Image (cartoon, rainbow, N blue to C red; front, top):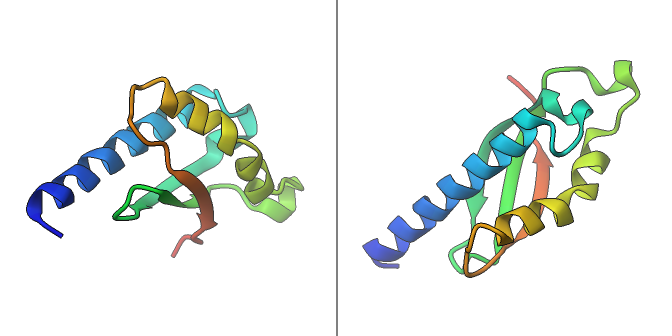
Length: 101
């Protein structure tokens, strides 16, 4: 992979990260998901897959909320918002729980 491809991947990852953090902060994805912390994103070289590693600041069991399920239910909405940002290709999104250290 050449340098221009790496730069493109980094630039797109940053745009996806900013858009996702904004949606979480404003509550566009639901008030209960405001407690999700995005740890990192991993975009495939072909820009076809985006892995989003997250942690939650509240305990799942105590709230009775399945954050993974809620996030998975919001994937279509996230892709729709990303599509409005004039990006050529919208990746398939996968949320992966990454517990806090």
